[in-house]
Image 1 (cartoon, rainbow over the protein chains, first blue to last red):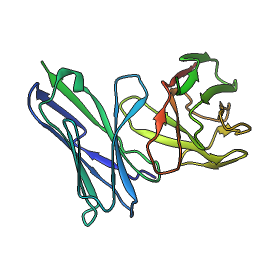
Image 2: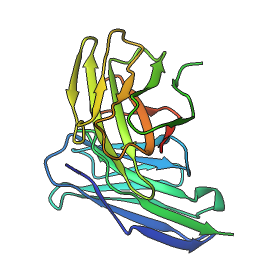
Image 3: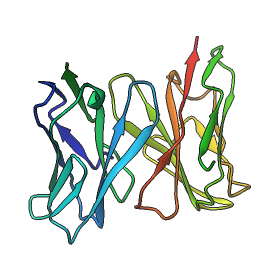
Image 4: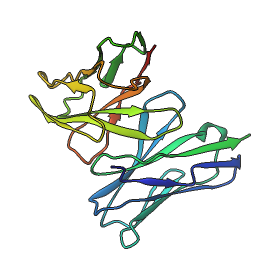
Length: 106
Length: 112
């Protein structure tokens, strides 16, 4: 079963713009994680937000969590061409969604 | 350097043959996972192990088998019973289930 569902499936923006991706999940969670995957590579952990946290920052990343809506969002500010990748959310049961493919145009 | 290694990076097999994918970690992690990824898709959990000599089926375990005889190693065998084995296979590990996973570089398996 798939726990996380990312939205949109694909996102294309210009360098310097902000990118927002959303994740919805089905059951109660202890935490939610966001990962990044460059084409043909393994995933890299970006950030973990616990169920008792509402917002977390890491560099240009901002993650929010709304447990009442069972949703989370990942905001990448001042995007760069190097941010082009797929982004996935996963809950603590280690199930991943289908991901959002982000393209940042120079 | 600590990390997860998967070998080989590319693997080609004929239909009807079993094939074993290697996954080794030197992070001293207890839990290890195998995922399958099809083009443009997300990750689907095949098997996971939280401790040596114990493992559980994930969401798509049919046609796959695993073993966990050592903490460092979690090999995945793709058997001839797997109807559509061509995919990208990713191995991951974590200190404790539900926390940050470290991923290997993946093995791309092509069966013809």
